[in-house]
Image 1 (cartoon, rainbow, N blue to C red):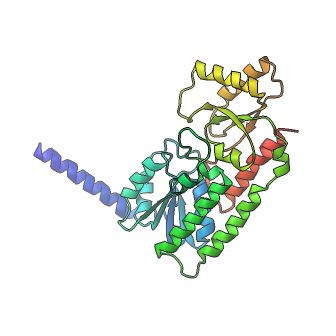
Image 2: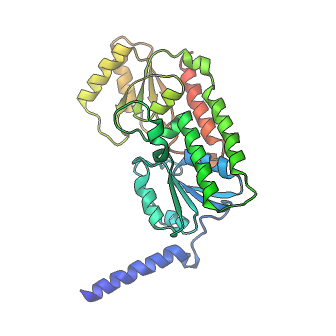
Image 3: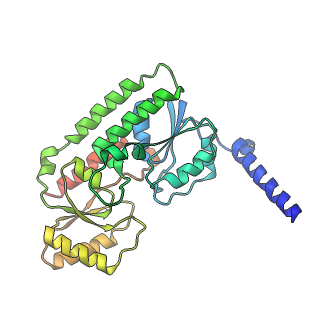
Length: 308
């Protein structure tokens, strides 16, 4: 037994050395990503917030890429290797990305700072009731608060190019977010009926743009949907005269299509499926400083276009 324990311990040590030193063959995950500070973000909206505040010279890595979003994401060896040279880790928090991001933090240096954007601002910006909703990045007011907090954390960190003005960068981006708040404001005001979401992700989005949500098909993407919930949702949609069912590009439309069929058969002839992206996933080639605002505008365009 003692020999087995020694062998297992040796395996762990060798694996760690291979991870941190790369055994001479691993590619540097920071290559081509920029300089200092080196920031790791969990998913795309946080990347955009950090990029706009930290500027072009900063090195920023987005952990969730391609079709991988924060729901159920599992960390990789490359992610752990990235932590070894990072200065700041930015997560959303509130149960969305905490699991894998905290594992990554344990793989980083002792000096690695860890900041949970949504969790930090939640108490002073909560809307509605019920269980805590972690999707704060979809609200303009909440996004602005996170940008301001990221600015403060970067200023306090003491790392990065001293010539970069975090205050000026944040102010410029906050002005862009203010303009987003008024994007197609009159057209959105013309949407009178509440809409249904795929999962409970769009409360802050709806609050920002004066929209109403009747309910959701699922609580979370992973939750099972049963007959009683569907029957209650159908009754609610008929009562509220729902005309829009929001579908998310990351998930299949089957449940939304079935709900639409049920509503149309009961007299709601104008029900439409409308793509509204909660911005939890992003193709690597598309990710840049402007991605967040562009995708939010696309959501608005889709909702406004559904009324024509």
